[in-house]
Image (cartoon, rainbow, N blue to C red; front, top):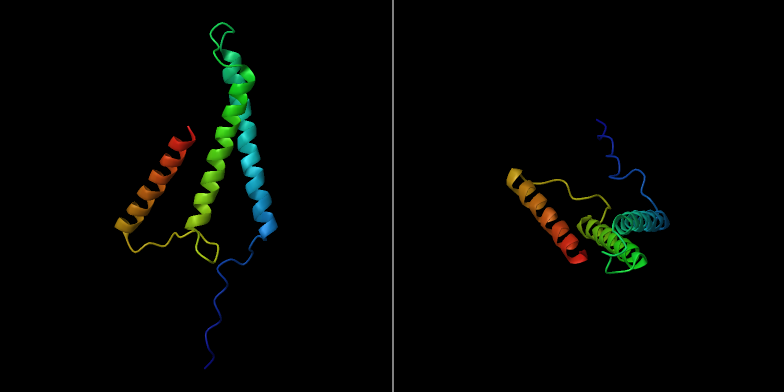
Length: 116
């Protein structure tokens, strides 16, 4: 009798450290660009008399906030990964899944609150 075939690895293709760094940097840079565009639209929508802060400061602060938020969200995902690199998605039941989702939403909300 032959033994059963071996199980495939959890991740047949794992990105290298460089690829993960480039992916993270690209995501943070895209968020900063989106924040800058949003800040420019927001600053441009105000009238010159109503503006208390210069437009460039609004653009920079919005871009920095978006960049910080994305970096912290990336860090959160890094913390909840298992050593194999897979996000922990297996739960022992509905209550464990609901608790995990609630904690995830709570942490994300607090990150957003701190960034704002």
